[in-house]
Length: 576
Image 1 (spheres, rainbow, N blue to C red):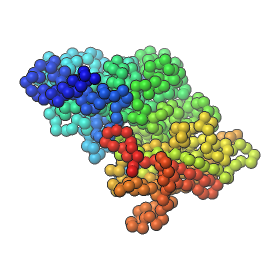
Image 2 (tube, helix red, strand yellow):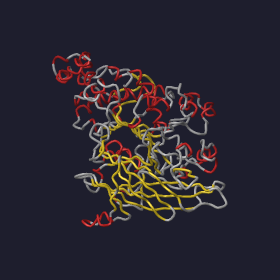
Image 3 (tube, helix red, strand yellow):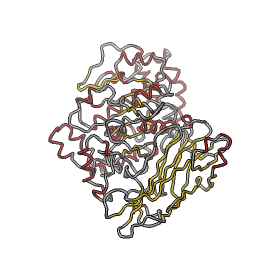
Image 4 (cartoon, rainbow, N blue to C red):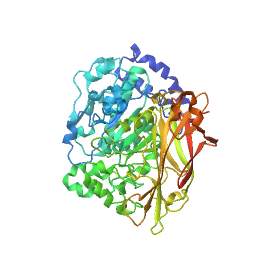
């Protein structure tokens, strides 16, 4: 403790050294930058044995694209690795009409991010440091200017002199430019990029904040490689000090269900190591340091959001979609289902204990997980949302729809759309094949282990989402549309649901100030000015949240909403 106190006490002195004559030598300046990197965001961690606190202030964003083929030449030609691809929705208007892609949307957003992709170069061969490095850049570790992942001195100098806030910077991790199909190389390269970003901000702002990461497909496995193998070489909690939150879009955390990796090896021996990460047997092996079952040892699960795609029908590679049906996961009832985004199984795109959400989008292509506006909205709410909401089932009973001659199974689905956006940020439906169930009795409170598609946790969690009052039409309240669906399927038939048992929309309104009040509407009367409460049903305040009833022909259920405030830094806390 005495050593730690001395170190932290020296930080105030360190701040004054960067520009002073005392810090003339490069070696001295590097020590100062190292001290600053443990300042504020890392210093608290040194005094605690657990994880550091998450934060929702703007931080640098690193974008990581995935690809699992045998030739990456086309990917290396893409300026932004596909993160500039967007979608157009001709039937919509305004904000819902054109989605420009992640890069442009971040730049045009209220957060005003700026592109810094060309500050870092990725090369197939080792590059030597330039003969002359400007004095202003000598505060960096000299190794940043040589190797295969290097700083471009001219671009770095421009970035240092720019008035742009480096905490609002965008970085595309171009690991395929390295032409090395080894995950260990990918992981070390990502760590190197993050170290440079933090060192840069330490020079400009006297602190070294963490970064946020958005990773698509295999890119999420690359991020896990960095966290589970590369960062542990730098210290037990090194990844926690450097990374704030992660969003994965269709990442095969548990592998690809149809194990073609062994068959693909003969096509390109260099990609054998890379493709082996898609092997489900390796991903569930506790003796494999990079397996998903070991992720929680290196990074807190509540700071990972898994975005799961469900629209296999729109995926361009229908061969993969067919294989996902043929290679059904355990409990999926074989050919009856294709619970995937076309390439990745829904069950494989998530890690138990981490927040998850479902988007009815395919793995790739037009209007997919990487090019859909929903992905941007979900990710930014996870990074910067100031409200966390959870929906749980308390009890539910089915009263109609039983097949007298077959064997009925029932499924429950809920879709969530906050006011202000024209699409679901959490989607369950018959088409998505991701509803909870099957329930084989009138009681929808069956044991967790009996469900092929189980609850999100053992307390019947349906949805956990993050909302931003800044994106709401008012700053004092939030409105969400909940669409409930109950369907019945004959176990001996083919298809997800033969009959619609119940479908109804409700609107949940949370009035946040001066104290939290929760109301339920069956229509859009919440927009009727001063008369909005006349048609509202107050929710029942109970321990842990607010309960309300859902009912109609053949169905009755009780559900609980939990609403927490997310502080600027720290864990969510209940509203009072």
